[in-house]
Image (tube, rainbow, N blue to C red; front, top):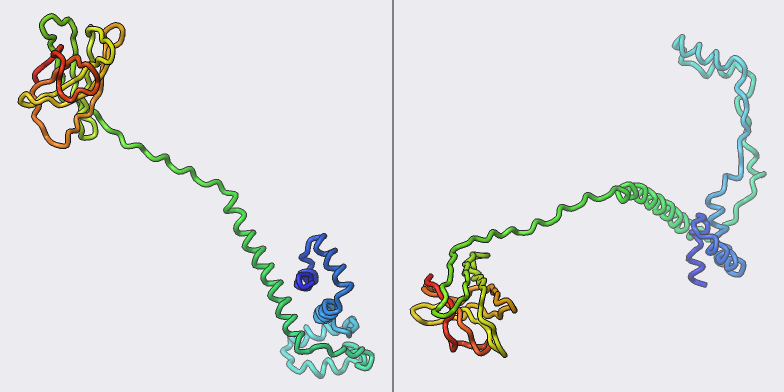
Length: 264
Protein backbone atom coordinates (compact mmCIF):
# COMPACT_ATOMS: atom_id res chain seq x y z
CA UNK A 1 0.00 0.00 0.00
CA UNK A 2 2.84 2.41 0.82
CA UNK A 3 4.18 1.99 -2.71
CA UNK A 4 0.82 3.01 -4.22
CA UNK A 5 0.59 6.04 -1.90
CA UNK A 6 3.93 7.26 -3.27
CA UNK A 7 2.35 7.47 -6.75
CA UNK A 8 -0.17 10.13 -5.73
CA UNK A 9 1.78 13.08 -7.19
CA UNK A 10 2.52 11.24 -10.44
CA UNK A 11 -1.15 10.27 -10.71
CA UNK A 12 -2.22 13.89 -10.19
CA UNK A 13 0.30 15.03 -12.85
CA UNK A 14 -0.86 12.28 -15.24
CA UNK A 15 2.64 10.75 -15.37
CA UNK A 16 1.64 7.12 -14.75
CA UNK A 17 1.36 4.46 -17.39
CA UNK A 18 -2.07 3.09 -18.21
CA UNK A 19 -1.48 0.03 -16.06
CA UNK A 20 -0.07 2.05 -13.12
CA UNK A 21 -2.99 4.46 -13.33
CA UNK A 22 -5.52 1.62 -13.16
CA UNK A 23 -3.72 0.05 -10.20
CA UNK A 24 -3.63 3.38 -8.35
CA UNK A 25 -7.31 4.08 -8.97
CA UNK A 26 -8.16 0.68 -7.44
CA UNK A 27 -5.98 1.63 -4.45
CA UNK A 28 -7.61 5.07 -4.26
CA UNK A 29 -11.04 3.49 -3.69
CA UNK A 30 -9.85 1.93 -0.42
CA UNK A 31 -7.29 4.49 0.82
CA UNK A 32 -8.92 7.38 2.69
CA UNK A 33 -5.57 9.14 3.16
CA UNK A 34 -4.91 9.28 -0.60
CA UNK A 35 -8.49 10.46 -1.22
CA UNK A 36 -8.04 13.33 1.21
CA UNK A 37 -4.62 14.36 -0.19
CA UNK A 38 -5.92 14.19 -3.78
CA UNK A 39 -8.84 16.44 -2.83
CA UNK A 40 -6.42 18.95 -1.31
CA UNK A 41 -4.31 18.96 -4.49
CA UNK A 42 -7.38 19.59 -6.61
CA UNK A 43 -8.47 22.34 -4.21
CA UNK A 44 -5.03 24.04 -4.55
CA UNK A 45 -5.17 24.13 -8.34
CA UNK A 46 -8.84 24.80 -9.03
CA UNK A 47 -10.07 28.19 -10.31
CA UNK A 48 -11.13 30.89 -7.85
CA UNK A 49 -14.75 30.37 -6.70
CA UNK A 50 -15.85 33.70 -8.02
CA UNK A 51 -15.87 35.49 -11.34
CA UNK A 52 -16.19 38.88 -13.02
CA UNK A 53 -18.62 39.61 -15.83
CA UNK A 54 -17.05 40.91 -19.03
CA UNK A 55 -18.65 44.19 -20.24
CA UNK A 56 -18.10 46.32 -23.29
CA UNK A 57 -16.65 49.85 -22.78
CA UNK A 58 -19.15 52.67 -23.30
CA UNK A 59 -19.41 54.35 -26.66
CA UNK A 60 -17.11 57.34 -27.11
CA UNK A 61 -14.74 56.26 -24.34
CA UNK A 62 -11.91 55.36 -26.73
CA UNK A 63 -12.19 58.71 -28.56
CA UNK A 64 -12.15 60.62 -25.29
CA UNK A 65 -9.05 58.79 -24.05
CA UNK A 66 -7.15 59.43 -27.29
CA UNK A 67 -8.27 63.05 -27.26
CA UNK A 68 -7.00 63.51 -23.72
CA UNK A 69 -3.64 61.99 -24.62
CA UNK A 70 -3.28 64.21 -27.67
CA UNK A 71 -4.25 67.40 -25.82
CA UNK A 72 -2.02 66.59 -22.87
CA UNK A 73 -4.98 66.58 -20.52
CA UNK A 74 -3.85 64.73 -17.40
CA UNK A 75 -7.19 65.00 -15.62
CA UNK A 76 -8.72 61.82 -17.01
CA UNK A 77 -10.85 61.20 -13.94
CA UNK A 78 -13.24 64.11 -14.76
CA UNK A 79 -13.74 62.91 -18.32
CA UNK A 80 -14.47 59.38 -17.15
CA UNK A 81 -16.80 60.50 -14.31
CA UNK A 82 -19.02 62.36 -16.83
CA UNK A 83 -19.90 59.05 -18.46
CA UNK A 84 -22.94 57.66 -16.65
CA UNK A 85 -22.51 54.25 -18.18
CA UNK A 86 -20.97 51.88 -15.61
CA UNK A 87 -17.46 50.67 -16.44
CA UNK A 88 -17.50 47.26 -14.85
CA UNK A 89 -19.89 45.23 -12.82
CA UNK A 90 -19.43 44.62 -9.16
CA UNK A 91 -17.93 41.43 -7.97
CA UNK A 92 -20.49 38.95 -6.84
CA UNK A 93 -21.61 39.25 -3.32
CA UNK A 94 -19.24 37.44 -1.04
CA UNK A 95 -22.08 35.67 0.61
CA UNK A 96 -22.63 33.73 -2.66
CA UNK A 97 -19.13 32.25 -2.42
CA UNK A 98 -19.23 28.91 -0.60
CA UNK A 99 -16.76 28.82 2.29
CA UNK A 100 -13.75 26.62 1.81
CA UNK A 101 -13.19 23.83 4.24
CA UNK A 102 -10.14 24.18 6.39
CA UNK A 103 -8.13 20.94 6.09
CA UNK A 104 -4.65 20.48 7.32
CA UNK A 105 -3.48 24.02 6.53
CA UNK A 106 0.02 23.05 7.67
CA UNK A 107 0.15 20.28 5.04
CA UNK A 108 -0.91 22.34 2.02
CA UNK A 109 2.41 24.21 1.56
CA UNK A 110 4.26 20.91 1.68
CA UNK A 111 1.99 19.41 -1.00
CA UNK A 112 2.34 22.54 -3.15
CA UNK A 113 6.12 22.46 -2.85
CA UNK A 114 6.20 18.77 -3.77
CA UNK A 115 3.96 19.39 -6.79
CA UNK A 116 6.14 22.29 -7.94
CA UNK A 117 9.34 20.29 -7.63
CA UNK A 118 7.77 17.43 -9.57
CA UNK A 119 6.74 19.71 -12.45
CA UNK A 120 10.13 21.47 -12.52
CA UNK A 121 11.97 18.14 -12.46
CA UNK A 122 9.94 16.77 -15.34
CA UNK A 123 10.54 19.93 -17.36
CA UNK A 124 14.29 19.83 -16.78
CA UNK A 125 14.43 16.15 -17.76
CA UNK A 126 12.58 16.91 -21.00
CA UNK A 127 14.96 19.79 -21.83
CA UNK A 128 17.98 17.57 -21.11
CA UNK A 129 16.70 14.80 -23.38
CA UNK A 130 15.95 17.26 -26.19
CA UNK A 131 19.53 18.55 -26.01
CA UNK A 132 21.09 15.09 -25.77
CA UNK A 133 19.25 13.40 -28.64
CA UNK A 134 20.89 15.36 -31.54
CA UNK A 135 24.37 14.66 -30.15
CA UNK A 136 23.71 10.93 -29.86
CA UNK A 137 22.44 10.82 -33.44
CA UNK A 138 25.65 12.28 -34.85
CA UNK A 139 28.03 9.53 -36.00
CA UNK A 140 31.37 9.55 -34.26
CA UNK A 141 34.43 10.10 -36.37
CA UNK A 142 36.33 6.87 -36.99
CA UNK A 143 39.60 6.73 -35.15
CA UNK A 144 42.74 6.39 -37.17
CA UNK A 145 44.24 2.90 -37.05
CA UNK A 146 47.44 2.61 -35.12
CA UNK A 147 50.43 2.40 -37.38
CA UNK A 148 52.67 -0.56 -36.82
CA UNK A 149 56.31 0.13 -36.25
CA UNK A 150 58.23 -0.69 -39.41
CA UNK A 151 61.57 -2.43 -39.01
CA UNK A 152 64.17 -2.52 -41.74
CA UNK A 153 66.44 -5.54 -42.16
CA UNK A 154 70.04 -4.97 -43.20
CA UNK A 155 72.35 -7.55 -44.76
CA UNK A 156 75.64 -7.37 -42.89
CA UNK A 157 77.56 -10.33 -44.29
CA UNK A 158 77.24 -12.97 -46.99
CA UNK A 159 79.47 -16.01 -47.22
CA UNK A 160 79.70 -19.02 -49.51
CA UNK A 161 80.68 -22.10 -47.53
CA UNK A 162 83.27 -24.36 -49.11
CA UNK A 163 82.75 -28.15 -49.01
CA UNK A 164 85.33 -30.44 -47.36
CA UNK A 165 87.22 -33.01 -49.40
CA UNK A 166 84.90 -35.66 -50.83
CA UNK A 167 81.74 -33.58 -50.15
CA UNK A 168 79.70 -32.24 -53.05
CA UNK A 169 77.30 -30.09 -50.96
CA UNK A 170 77.16 -26.30 -51.15
CA UNK A 171 75.73 -23.66 -48.80
CA UNK A 172 75.34 -19.91 -48.34
CA UNK A 173 75.37 -18.00 -45.03
CA UNK A 174 73.67 -14.63 -44.61
CA UNK A 175 74.02 -12.45 -41.53
CA UNK A 176 71.04 -10.07 -41.37
CA UNK A 177 70.59 -7.32 -38.76
CA UNK A 178 67.02 -7.37 -37.40
CA UNK A 179 65.93 -5.21 -34.43
CA UNK A 180 69.52 -4.74 -33.27
CA UNK A 181 70.14 -8.51 -33.42
CA UNK A 182 72.03 -10.60 -35.96
CA UNK A 183 69.96 -13.31 -37.61
CA UNK A 184 72.04 -16.05 -39.24
CA UNK A 185 70.34 -17.67 -42.26
CA UNK A 186 71.81 -20.84 -43.79
CA UNK A 187 70.64 -22.36 -47.08
CA UNK A 188 72.28 -25.62 -48.27
CA UNK A 189 71.88 -27.98 -51.23
CA UNK A 190 73.12 -31.45 -52.27
CA UNK A 191 73.62 -32.50 -48.66
CA UNK A 192 74.30 -36.19 -47.99
CA UNK A 193 71.25 -38.09 -46.70
CA UNK A 194 70.56 -38.48 -42.98
CA UNK A 195 69.61 -41.64 -41.12
CA UNK A 196 67.92 -42.23 -37.77
CA UNK A 197 68.20 -39.21 -35.44
CA UNK A 198 71.03 -37.60 -37.38
CA UNK A 199 70.84 -33.81 -37.93
CA UNK A 200 72.92 -31.03 -39.41
CA UNK A 201 74.37 -28.55 -36.89
CA UNK A 202 75.66 -25.04 -37.67
CA UNK A 203 78.55 -23.71 -35.60
CA UNK A 204 80.29 -20.34 -35.27
CA UNK A 205 83.80 -20.39 -33.84
CA UNK A 206 86.00 -17.91 -32.01
CA UNK A 207 89.64 -18.99 -31.74
CA UNK A 208 88.58 -22.61 -32.26
CA UNK A 209 85.80 -22.58 -29.60
CA UNK A 210 82.45 -23.62 -31.15
CA UNK A 211 79.02 -22.09 -30.40
CA UNK A 212 75.74 -23.60 -31.59
CA UNK A 213 74.08 -21.55 -34.32
CA UNK A 214 71.12 -23.62 -35.54
CA UNK A 215 70.07 -27.22 -36.22
CA UNK A 216 68.19 -28.56 -39.27
CA UNK A 217 67.47 -31.66 -41.35
CA UNK A 218 67.49 -31.97 -45.11
CA UNK A 219 64.70 -32.91 -47.46
CA UNK A 220 64.74 -35.90 -49.81
CA UNK A 221 66.54 -33.89 -52.50
CA UNK A 222 69.34 -32.94 -50.06
CA UNK A 223 68.34 -29.28 -49.52
CA UNK A 224 67.85 -27.63 -46.14
CA UNK A 225 67.77 -24.27 -44.38
CA UNK A 226 67.81 -22.75 -40.89
CA UNK A 227 67.40 -19.29 -39.33
CA UNK A 228 69.07 -18.56 -35.99
CA UNK A 229 69.24 -15.37 -33.87
CA UNK A 230 72.82 -15.00 -32.66
CA UNK A 231 72.09 -13.75 -29.16
CA UNK A 232 74.80 -15.08 -26.86
CA UNK A 233 74.56 -12.39 -24.17
CA UNK A 234 78.08 -11.17 -24.86
CA UNK A 235 80.01 -9.74 -27.77
CA UNK A 236 82.15 -12.21 -29.73
CA UNK A 237 84.52 -11.92 -32.64
CA UNK A 238 83.63 -15.06 -34.56
CA UNK A 239 86.14 -16.02 -37.19
CA UNK A 240 84.69 -19.22 -38.73
CA UNK A 241 81.31 -20.75 -39.62
CA UNK A 242 80.90 -24.51 -40.21
CA UNK A 243 78.24 -27.23 -40.74
CA UNK A 244 78.66 -30.71 -39.29
CA UNK A 245 76.63 -33.92 -39.43
CA UNK A 246 75.72 -34.90 -35.85
CA UNK A 247 74.30 -38.17 -34.43
CA UNK A 248 71.36 -36.18 -32.93
CA UNK A 249 70.10 -32.63 -32.53
CA UNK A 250 71.36 -32.24 -28.97
CA UNK A 251 75.11 -32.11 -29.54
CA UNK A 252 76.68 -29.37 -27.45
CA UNK A 253 80.09 -29.95 -29.05
CA UNK A 254 80.90 -31.05 -32.62
CA UNK A 255 81.04 -34.87 -32.88
CA UNK A 256 80.77 -35.33 -36.62
CA UNK A 257 83.03 -34.31 -39.47
CA UNK A 258 82.89 -30.78 -40.92
CA UNK A 259 81.04 -30.85 -44.24
CA UNK A 260 81.07 -27.11 -45.13
CA UNK A 261 82.91 -24.10 -43.69
CA UNK A 262 83.99 -20.52 -44.37
CA UNK A 263 86.02 -17.86 -42.62
CA UNK A 264 84.10 -14.79 -41.37
